[in-house]
Image (cartoon, rainbow, N blue to C red; front, side):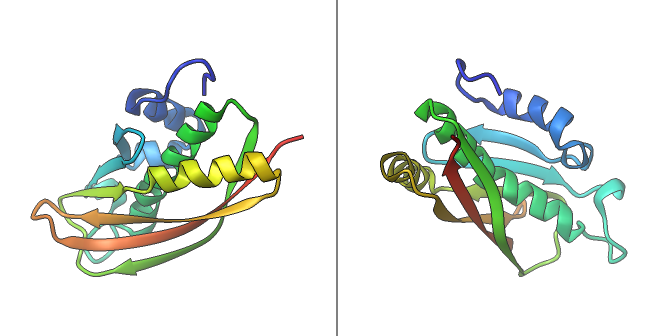
Amino acid sequence: MNKNKSLSPTKVNAFMFFKLPSAWWSGVRLKQLNSTTAVSEVKHKWFNQNPFNSMYFAVQAMAAELTTGALVMQEIQKSGHKISMLVAENQSFFHKKATGKIRFECHQGQEVNQIIQKCIKSKDGEKLNLKSQGYNEKNELVSHFQFVWTIKLKK
């Protein structure tokens, strides 16, 4: 990602094409990114379905992870520091069959900023526990994911 320019859904989606092609080809797209919120969407299609005629769980996981990861990437870029990021843990919970267009949302941008600032000041690695919720077109909760990201200043 270009360090001198702010992140946008278009830039993240282009990055995804080259660095996360399985997510891109599955239809995962970042739709919104600001200081507090990231939103992704993915539509249930033949290419990303499971044998039960709904969206494969891994496709949902990619769309959910994108919302949390985009917030972390954005805040790292804003900080001007070289910081590594990696998913250390994840949990998933499924509530309804995922069909149609599914929207994932993470609203923890402020928390991400605070923890990155803490990491910079302390020079210690930190963990971020971020949640992304997936909703169908009726705004019903389909699934939710929790990701534990680890961040660390690069030397």
